[in-house]
Image 1 (cartoon, helix red, strand yellow):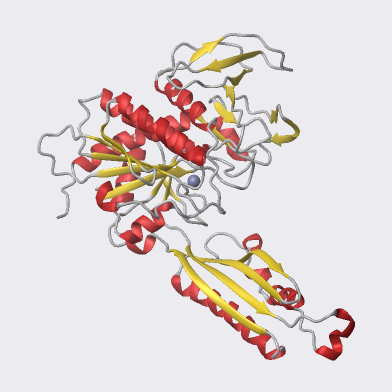
Image 2 (spheres, protein in one colour; image 1 turned 180 degrees about the vertical axis):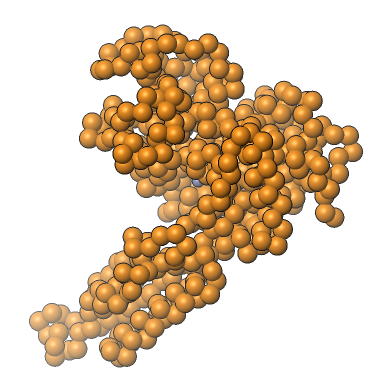
Length: 462
Ligand SMILES: [Zn+2]
């Protein structure tokens, strides 16, 4: 449903017009601040207003996931939004709308081609938001017709979103930008993806003349804590190819991600009273943990010293005292050989430290996290090639972006469902400076609508 803009003057410095945006949708929406420095009011903007209204509703539900929770989804807010999405899919008239016992919300958009032989295409987006910045009490601010000047934040005067530091902002000149208010993240990662997919559902169901094969929709929880597809039943999803909508600027296609391992090094020392430490042979595990970190090749192998296709070893957490210290790492590389090399570096430091201090006990455990989806996609690049074609059809120039991280698609592709990641307009994810342009999200809807038409001309492989 389209948001109704209520003209209500409120005090706000240096802005031509400030309005409060409220939603006419079934779920009540707290007002969002709208800043329009252009001073003119456009008439109905069709799809982009629908998209914006949805997006504003979704970001105001606190869906931050939790890496210390033992439930799935990890937080109740995610279930709240998932239930809203389930209801909305049903109201739009999607088929087979269902929430699984683990909270995944799925639905079907039936084929518009009788006896379609095309593959089933799925679109996925995650409802949870990152843990890096506060995610509760998100107050979205809409900057209509962005004028290219630095953006200041109502709840944090020290924060500035400046085109000199963030040149991508200039690509959004004249567009409608959404930011948070300065205290929290926005949650465009990945509620932009959720709003895009929901608008795609509405668009396809409302235009039955568009020829496409069967489409599956899936909203997932807990992506940010790496558990997004833990309980996803691929048989139930029933797709031949899938796309996550969780990317950056228009035209971006991600079909390569890191290969990822986690490592945990435990150092057991010998604790004594400091008074008799020399006599009783104290071995200080905390001190050895410091030595371990100092031995890492940080200058060429840390996230803060690498870029592009270089991998890294990243100490994420350390806890310890004299008796025992534990160091947690993540290891990343685009190639399996590079990842194995990073395991060897960790093992080598363990051995060196053990030799230097035989009284300590140093052990190391590795855990595989995910793999570069490119390893599988290279064998059949059609999911990527058709996405490029769809983008060109809506006048975008597609470009590849290898992700220095992982997506749910990394694991889905490894499990047998090819799942590249497409742009949805997110910028500065995981930060209070997060922003998204409504018109960029709209381009993603149009790209996906084109994409399903292209897939309908492809014969499904049995
Ligand atoms: Zn994301």
